[in-house]
Image (cartoon, rainbow, N blue to C red; front, side, top):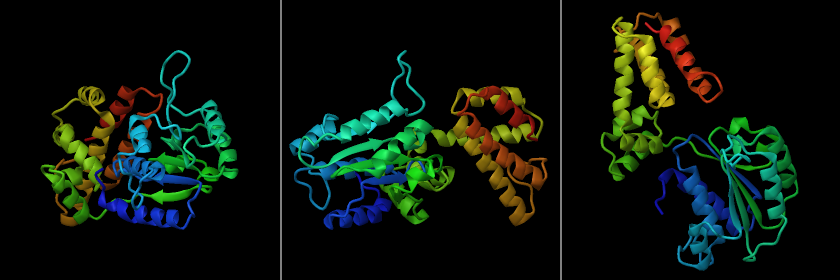
Length: 312
């Protein structure tokens, strides 16, 4: 199993606690998407259940490991988005799922060791589900472990966060990230890392998906609009049809570069925007708010059109 170098410190700390028989009953693995939280969780859980683990690393060959990899281990479960009665996937984790989880953890381990449940994404629990989870967190059974994975831990109630041992993944140094990307064979690693805001996991995915070309398209669109050569409605339609949230990330990034060039050299930036510095800052914040709003019930075309109509 490939190990990301920025996992090493967290791994060593947890294995030390395991060796002291001082494992917490709940871990909150959090931080930006793309840093391998789920790979870390998978490796750690399999190692706990493995019958021949070495320094916490799963052997991959024992019965427990084979069942784990097949998704049929009786003492491991992942709780995520379930289905509604009409067969449509839910957009949140609901209270009935947490109640089923509590009933499962009240039963004895079938292999006589740990019982592990991963809730992913934990920040998708609704209020009722989060409240139901509190009782399990406050009255944990022996040798049970809850693994909560969250890209946005601030969406979890403080009562949940305070009852979990927090494992927070941060962006590694640029040198570490570039070395990892180059070892993984990522072309234009430095450009990809800049596009991903220093996030190596995201940089790798975006480079493989061709997102760097999309980044250039966004900058060309903004430059054309600033020069009066484009139509906001046509740009909004294209963005909405192809990764709108990522395009808004790139748009905000481009505006940040524009502001940085103005501040450092006093010259016009690559977008040649006609907005003054305060207006650029407001547009930057609006782009980020719009990216968040696209996940809600509002019409995406109207959100994008309103944003782009204010760009010049």
